[in-house]
Image 1 (tube, one colour):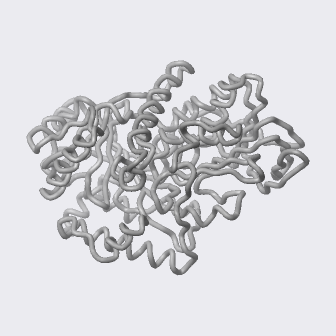
Image 2 (cartoon, helix red, strand yellow):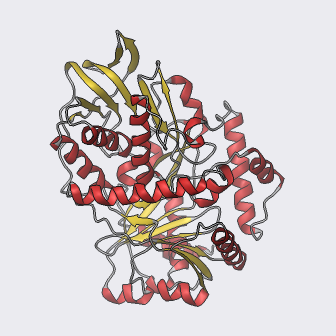
Image 3 (cartoon, helix red, strand yellow):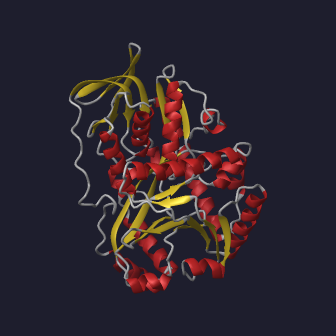
Length: 472
């Protein structure tokens, strides 16, 4: 990238606030008080993101008399649930390709359950009046290289032959640019029903309000410190109190799990995003983005982008940063060198938007596991359930995970708990320095593949055979 171009593009960041756009909202609700003293309940939910809130909400919908308490260590939705791109996908498997590779015998059922789950989210938005800018726009997976367009076309034919391409259309260069006009687009796959766009923070705040309305007791600024058996149930200690519960659901995702044996199954990946100022009608017309679909490109180091309700463009992805030792720290949420890189990529994609400025730039940690999609299980003779490892596609899949956790706690055999995806876990990550070395080699190999026509080297082919990977 030429220095003059870099200077021109980085000027667009001069007024960008290093805070998540979605959370920078005057309508943000006040936090609930912290727990002080003892508390008892039927179900204790740990974690105030999508996982925890969906679990608490569905638990009350299944049994209004169930006494439910939710603990959040900071404020509801402050982490990944409030700062993501707002792509609410039907896929439960981090995309059809990943699901087909890992669970070919179950893929039709997984796709059916995923579509049903997205429909249930849409119904919940209406039933609980969740003001979250929910739009069933679909998504286009765009090719920016000729080989990617060929791969998308071949993939569409393969999935169509398997009966898995309903509602999905292949677009050539002219057709994709008729949807959204970028000189870099040479093809695409348009999934018309499988993805909705939401304001992620408003969704999490709406779920909080719905939970409170159903009688869930929520305590914020209340980290769960320890988890131990207590009589016939479990006890969780907090800084100022303790909760005794018959059952516990853990939805802490990337944050250290109260079950230590699970900590090696996930690692944090830091993802970054920019948000533009609102586009004028003329600017919006110059890119022709009339149907407001979400978009993502087909590279290994990919970008995702979408329009907000007030016609800003969110532009994120590409860099996926793993900190040595898997530490989750606030200082990793801000990374100017990635913001500069993303700004350059943005104006390469949309040169007709030269002069647009970014108002917000932020990052945050995603929990990834070696199979890219969530895993589940129980502990303490079925009194504790957990779900983790969503790898960046948790906006929709966490609702499914909530139902799985509640099924497991109930000891029920359901179409969800019978899935191999639910019954088996991914391989854990190795200890340091092997984890960092393996992830660094994988990232280098993925970047090299992007630069060499998608050709995967020996390392990536070996990882493919083992069913291992690193993604965000």
